[in-house]
Length: 248
Image (cartoon, rainbow, N blue to C red; front, side, top):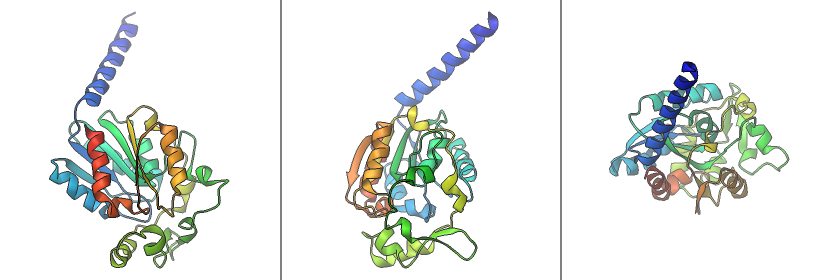
């Protein structure tokens, strides 16, 4: 009987802590970048949020495996004090689905991001549909890591950025482990957290309709912006506004 009571008390304490996080405004934001990018892809959004008073952390994912990226994101969450909004772009959506179950996470924000359910991989999400023009531009580098063809990057990944800015973004991209496409999601935190989705309607990497499918399945609050896959850069104000709203 005592064991049962102890279990019930622990469960009640956990629910109480989760409810407190849900009601309290988040002052922390953790930003997770996607494949074919690095943490600087969030620089403009981070600057806007910092000016609004948020404490912002930009995770540097190694892109060596889903487990490694989740570890990097969890380390960033461990360093936060209080409620936190966890945000992801592209591949980063797979990462925050795994890491987002942390009690500190008040809300999840997906920006043109994949959102697998438990048991799904990117390969499974992509099967049965013709590859996007952007997907066709993914190729191995000399070491076998996957990169987005730098020559195609300004047009297909970041078509709404000045060419020089898109070329600079392409030059800083981190190669991805090809095995990431087959990594199976073990957690889908969006089942249990308030979720927001920014659909980039001019995206040539993850088609807008695919993004709408992810958002609809998650029952996310949706904002659509006329942007490329690099909408987190080209429409930083709009993306930051969604994150600000998720923090309330």
